Length: 103
Image (cartoon, rainbow, N blue to C red; front, side, top):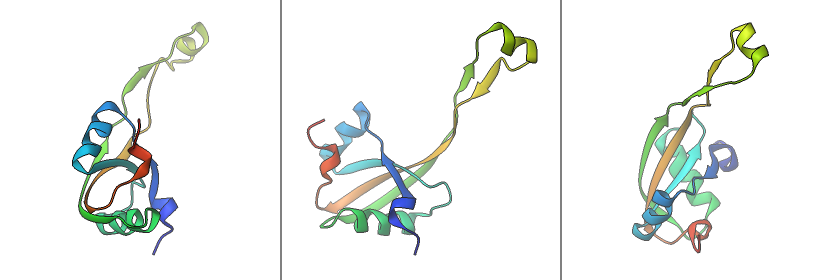
C-alpha cells in the first residue's frame, strides 16, 4: 500500500466543501494516479475513527492564465495554464474530520 500522506495531498477548503461537511461530505486533493480504493484506505488511515461510505473522484482541469509583461510577450509566452489535479469527494458513514470544523 502507498503512503497515505502521498495519496491525500491536502483538504480543499472552499465555501461549497465546508457546507458539504454538514452532510458528511469532505473534499481532498489527491494523487492523480490514486484510485477510489486507495483513497478510501488513506482517509481511514489518516483520520482514526472515520468510516468511509463512498468516494467520488474527478479531474479538475487547469484554468487558462495570461502572463503580462513586455519580455514575455516578445518571447511568445503570453498564455499559460494552472496545474490540473484530481479531486476526491469522500462521504462518511461514521465519524467526523476535524479539519473542516470551525471554518
